[in-house]
Amino acid sequence: MPETANHVDPRRWKALIFIALAQLMVVLDATIVNIALPSAQTDLGISDANRQWVITAYALAFGGLLLFGGRVADLWGRRRTFIIGLVGFAVASALGGAAVNEGMLLGARALQGVFGALLAPSALSLLAVTFTEARERAKAFGVFGAIAGGGGAVGLILGGVLTEYMNWRWTFFVNIPFAVVAATGAVLVIREPAQGRNSSRLDIPGVILATLGLVSLVYGFTRAESDGWLAGATLGLFAAAALLLLAFVLVESRVKAPLLPLRVVAERNRAGVYASLGLAVIGMFGLFLFLTYYLQIVKGYTPVVTGLAFLPMVAGMITGSTQIGARLMTRVRPRFLMAPGFTVAALGMLVLSQIDLDTSYPALILPGFVLMGLGMGTAFMPAMSLATHGVQPRDAGVASAMVNTSQQVGGAIGTALLNTIAASATTAYATAHAAGARSVDLLKLQSMVHGYTTAIWWAVGILVLAAVIAFTFINTGRPGAGSPAASSDEDAAAGAGEADAQLPVMAH
Image 1 (spheres, rainbow, N blue to C red):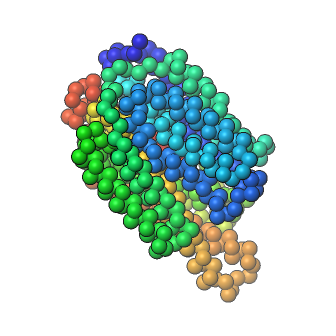
Image 2: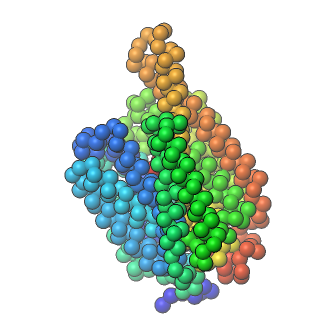
Image 3: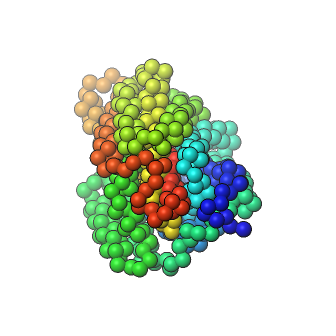
């Protein structure tokens, strides 16, 4: 029997285990494949030009289809969409692990993205309707956020261990037991409230325009990385993205049952959250991308040791999320947690901009990591809660999907933007210092570090901008204090906090 909105589900804490496990699988998959990529590339004979597609195929499918996935969860039911997403993700992972050539691997990665786009919004929506009491919800999303945030580091470590001691294929196969356990738990334990289902039809023109617009935008940044910002193909893709997304907004303002009801994003506080989150994720990606290469290539760490080196940042995230964000978000206005959180993360990034060839891990990298983690964990808790606070239950899935979309698109843009900045700075440094170089190898490492630090400086600025937007735009009261945007207390409870603590998905 489905629970009513007013009835507290006695199995809600068990449900949290399976929902968090599914989220862990999706987050884990982002970083675990990155570490395995060099081995897979050698094994399947993938060219250097095409290797980025192992990452990009997933990001394009995931980012492009998230809004569609959120609306499907609202229409079909969150539990059903969740189970379909899990089963599909497991099948796609099996195909990836069994890949015999480049095409099969890229197809499997795209398929993982498609089912991930069904899985992520339905998981977040399920949590929101399962935990309706403000304090319990803060605690549940704190746990969920810590697991989701920690998943990236677990992926780095597990990816290193599996690749170093077994085979890159196991970085795909490892998803299957996660999916089987989570799907079994969903069937036996998870119950969805009967209310809040959206019975309207799917907005097909909206789906097509949003998907093509987001794919063009992400692909444009990917092409900028390889072809340059002013190349015809790059500019053409950006122009196409702008036209498609403008057409999407016009369609959404006119159709009876829009894919993205504009009321979800037009509200000042939610707009501020989506913008600041997207920027913060762009900044975060600078760190993961460059620090992973720095630790392995410049410092000579193994994949396993690199994964372990990131653990203090994850500990900071978990502490910021569960001990600071979750405890204060029912007492303090969101902007007084978000703006300082992003500022502390920017300070951590500022410390890391000082890396050099012989930088000490305990003296400089460790404090930078801890500050980054604490700041991000503290900021993301209230941000995620606010992103879906006060939306009507029928819009819960799509509001949740907007959070994921801002993260995925932010992550894809961050990877391309900061990579391009780093590559340009590296080339410029190498050219300027070539004449007086004592050693080609030394110059190569110095140029690389100069490129990384230049990009990290940009990331500092982006995080400061995220803090300014959070402080300026977000003017609502405490998330637990009720919202005039909701039509009733039940609506506020059902709509609030789908994504309260889904920390940024690391290193797509």
